[in-house]
Length: 149
Image (cartoon, rainbow, N blue to C red):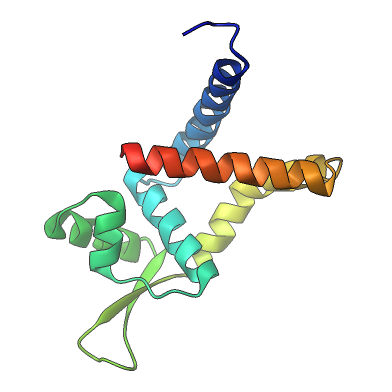
């Protein structure tokens, strides 16, 4: 592929952003005694809660590509750290739901909050049309990456 291709240049910039975010995530995980998969699990659970959807251990395992034993170990670890709790579904007592504890949210905001705040402020200079383009671009990249996975 031609290095001058504008699309390829965007891919290289996206990779650079991804590397920086991965390094920040690794630093957060290390500082808080978490495995990188623990952090991915917390992100999945937070996104699900924000969407108003229930999360079960089976669902989380599928999101992370873990088997049942690996998922149980991960949830046990997060529960011991006070970051996640298991609850029973009020509609079906046999079903276990996962909820993120307030401690996890506070911990995440204390580390990632300044970054999030600066990005939000930086995006205020974008027009509604530009933001719509950014959203469309990120949605497209996410769909392509998910399909590759």
